[in-house]
Structures are given as C-alpha cells and as structure tokens.
Length: 137
Length: 150
Image (cartoon, rainbow over all chains, first blue to last red):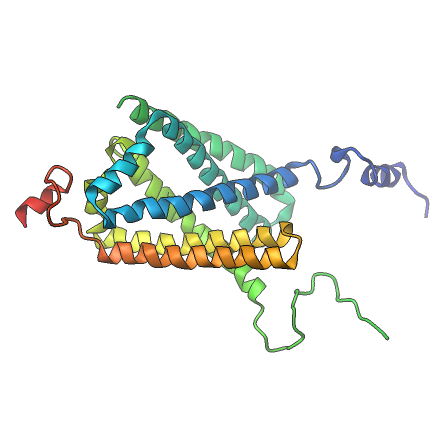
C-alpha cells in the first residue's frame, strides 16, 4: 500500500517535540481538562471553608456576622468574581463533558468554544452587578 | 505461563469476581448525575445570595435565618451540601489517584478526603436541622424581624 504524504505527515507530527503536533496535547481538549481540574480543586477547598463559616450561625449572630463581613470587603469581592468564574466554567464544561460522553465526541472542540462564549455572557451578567454591590458599600 | 490482555475498553476491575459491583462505573455515573443537579442548585444559590437585592452586601445572620426557617431552602441547602461534598470528594480522589505516586501517600490523602467529607456533611446537616433563628439573649438588631413577635 503506497504511503501518502498525509499519513507520513501525521506520523512525523506524532513524534514531534512540538505540543501542537499531537492530536490531544496543547489543544482545546487538553486545556479544557486542565481548567476543569484546577477549577474543581479551587471550588472544593472553598466549599470546605464555606461550610465551616456558615456553621457559625449555630454559634452566635455576632460570630457569623464577623466572618461574613470579611466576604464583603473589596479584596474578597474580587475573589468572589474569581470563584464564580471558576464555578461557571466548571459547570458549563461539565455539561460539555456529559454531551461528549452521551451525545457525540466529534463536537468537543466547538462545544469548548460554546462553553467559553456562555462563560463570557454569564460573567458579563454577574461581575458588574456584584462589583457595584461590593464597592458601593 | 500465559497471560491474557483485556480487550480494549473493557471495564477496569480489581477482582476477577463476576458478581462484584463496579464502583468506578457508579462513581463515573454519580459525577454526571450530581453534576447536572448541582448546576441548577448552585446557580440558584448564587443568584439568590449574590444577584438579588444588594447581593453579598446584604448577607448577615438575619438573612440566613430567613432562609433556614423556610423548608424549601432547608431541603435545597441540604441536598446541595451532600451532592457537592461527595462530588468534590470523588473528584479529589481522582486527582490523588493520578498524582500521588506512592501507595502510602495515596492512602493518607484519601483517608483525609473521606474524613473531611464525612465530618462536613455531618456538621452541615446538623446546622441546618438544629438551627435557632432567634437565639436567647441575642441583640434584637442582629436577628430577623420575626423574632420580635415571639
């Protein structure tokens, strides 16, 4: 069977040191996976802290209010934008993973750009309103 | 001595018992089912607590008291607590399996995850169901307005 230029190219690309030369490494598939892991870990550790701070309602109103007022400072307000950004990406990319698993994997790249687009729209809806709430108090 | 190689994509199982439950498969299914529910629960949680009214600036003990005396939000929060912690704990277990290289470190980290998840589910559930919105002796300006009528 004669080897065409196309298959030779793909074989050379597979052994290339350049990340872009492989099917998965360095592409949308890899970056969505990396971001899903990083945002997942960040959300998990916030969740541990968030359950502990909310549990202070069982201690006293003063204890809960002292901690929740820390969430209303400008620096934490910016942190909440980052947190919501992480949650929104993890949520939409998680739905993308489900669609890849149960619907059709060939749309994974276009679905990644849909995730990014929905993330931008959601954050445009959230961030300005939240930052006004934080910085006008 | 002969060894057989599994067919590609055959499910990973530690034991050869035919009747054993494939826990990894159920974990995989759990991540997807709980994930869809959590998108709804957490987006709703964020919308009510950060978008409505003055958002994060309006949060205080009286705000939480208003929510945790409403059975709708009690059920919402408890389901969110259980689903999110188990989803997060299972995700962290996946990372430990991927990145912790020694058997001992994997064991220690997974026990730490299990202890964190079980203790925080217990704590959170107890807080929701034993919450007192009008604690005795609390200053009137810190508790919800409905405490005055008691």
